[in-house]
Image (cartoon, rainbow, N blue to C red; front, side, top):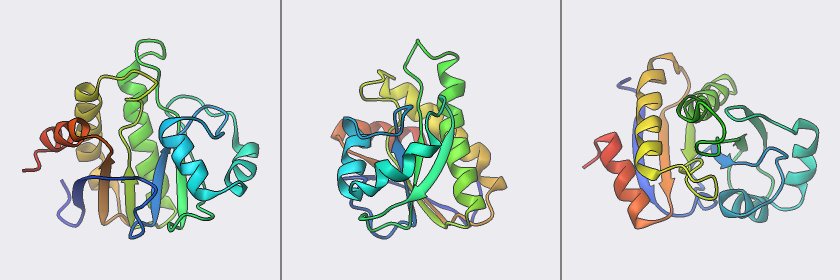
Length: 172
């Protein structure tokens, strides 16, 4: 793990992380408003977000694309399509691609602080424990390749998700 990158897990709302350059949207393939994280981000960013995303859609599981954040307090939003558990296969590799591709995209864009939700754990049915383990593995394995990122924050909505991700990352 790189000494220069801070890693955090917090309980909260991904749309209310004003100190982060970029937040990651657990998007749908068409990059449109929806439920869960995607719905919250689209509501917070305003109607210009869907308009800006239209030319980038559709995306495939594991892909990551970037847009302005519009009415959100961040500079950018990275949109990634997580796998539907046991439908999009191999689910673990596709979920890993979401985190890896998002981190590498943020780094290329010279963004220094990034926030992630628990990708695929809502309507896409990915078990939280397995998702947390995949995310922890990927983050630790890619840190040495990141040159711009100084902070990676996981923003978890529920008590259970928060505790599970903290444990997977070894955060006391």
